[in-house]
Length: 120
View (spheres, rainbow, N blue to C red):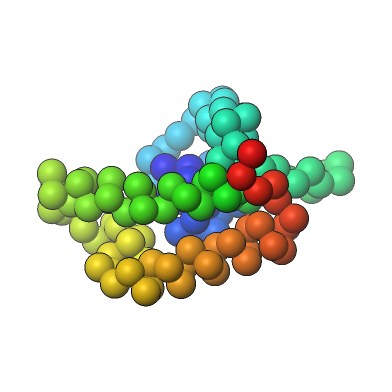
């Protein structure tokens, strides 16, 4: 859910991830999951000055999960077709060119722009 929200909806601050998702994740659980994803190398965090929020960015490893996320979304729809409308737009296309384009856009946005760490 966290990787989906970062990659599909550009939710990159703790507050956005906490309040803008429909799953109702609690603050302590979100905090642990973000720490786990950062520690595992899927996300990086840009620290911010006191009073401002840090921003999470996908790393190369996080970006490499896009095909897996698409397949998981497809499996979810196969299990429960009513979830099809909840699938992020770029995951709805069967067009590999569109998926490749989204992947490159995410690389530019998260890795190039933020100077986030590349694959460990």
